[in-house]
Length: 243
Length: 252
Ligand SMILES: Nc1ncnc2c1ncn2[C@@H]1O[C@H](COP(=O)(O)OP(=O)(O)OP(=O)(O)O)[C@@H](O)[C@H]1O
Ligand SMILES: [Mg+2]
Image (tube, rainbow over all chains, first blue to last red; front, side, top):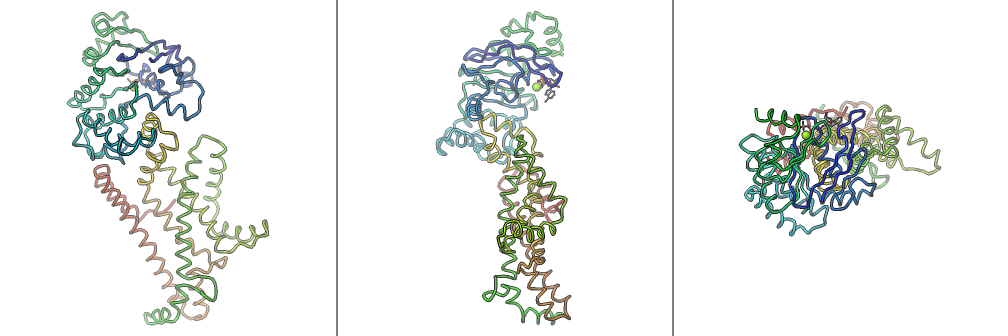
């Protein structure tokens, strides 16, 4: 469903991604991990073209995301790839339900009633029915991130991308967000998730990509990756993580 | 002294209110208010358009507006007014009413100033909001319209008010090109009385003060209403200091 071929990217002289070749199948959940600065965020942000790439190609559902195309076309493709940020990025001037309903109305032209009905359902799905009219400033981090997930889901994307969705959260709120993401996985959503939550990776991931210095160094099912990492870099990373 | 002022108001209130109208053009306070309202009403959307142009990556949009902003920043408003007054008829042969010259000059001048305020508000928001909107499929302008500007404009309300207030004050400069506004009426009265400039101009100052003060009150009330609507997004502390800033800020 998502296909990365020879993806390279540099910031000036610094090569962040050095030829990424990988694939995510429909319904597959891929967890991306690796040391800080290895290029995880950059990689996942190239998939919906929040970052441009230097060379290579990325296709989603057969559409080459990085080909030259009119802005309209790119917007349409982007709306079909959900993205959840580490820092939530909810719209602070809109209430929770407005955050969720606004883009379907303004981007897809969904009617107000349909968008709010859908938003109400999504709020229920992330367990925040009673917070529909709360503004982001009145919500805890975990609640904000759940609204952000609902906001992305409102566009009905076949793919969801997560960039460290829980690392800005207090430990006691991590679970509530991860369980929402687990629910999505159970429903068969195709997902890429940058995270260091290894328990989550074990439970949910079909595959773990270990990235170091701009390359996918290992790609394996979680049980294999965690019990028998092949490279010394992955071994070192995992042992540091356990400490 | 106070009786002088009362006497002036009693004798000249109609001139102060509407100028020579209906025997001449509408003037006095009415002209000042109309000029102010129109200038603000046009300068505001113009400033947003200019700010968007300056934020744009396209040099065709960016360069001319940047030049305009630097130009208006560096040239006194009075200069622009005089140029407009003398040069536009020379260049075009058209007989432009001084009221219109004044209005256009104010819109360009204050629009350019205000555009910097708006741009500052947008830049201060940071990338996160724009990225979130784009990731949801919004176009650049859609993201501006529904996500960025509603926040950015709200955050710079105090500075916007400052520009509005100085727009009102700047309408007084129309006097030099004979725009028959309140200032013009007051100076006519002064020329007739000759002996009471302090009293005449005291009335003038008081009226401008009331207008500007009312605008500030309206703006603070509007801001308060938005703040209450978004309750929880703005801590009480910030809300309070915003209001104070609204009363003290000068446009830079
Ligand atoms: N806009 C930028 N300009 C220059 N260098 C950048 C930019 N963004 C990221 N980098 C560099 O690219 C490298 C990869 O960054 P990236 O954010 O993808 O890492 P990461 O794996 O997500 O790290 P972390 O775990 O800390 O989030 C880092 O060395 C970073 O300094
Ligand atoms: Mg990162």
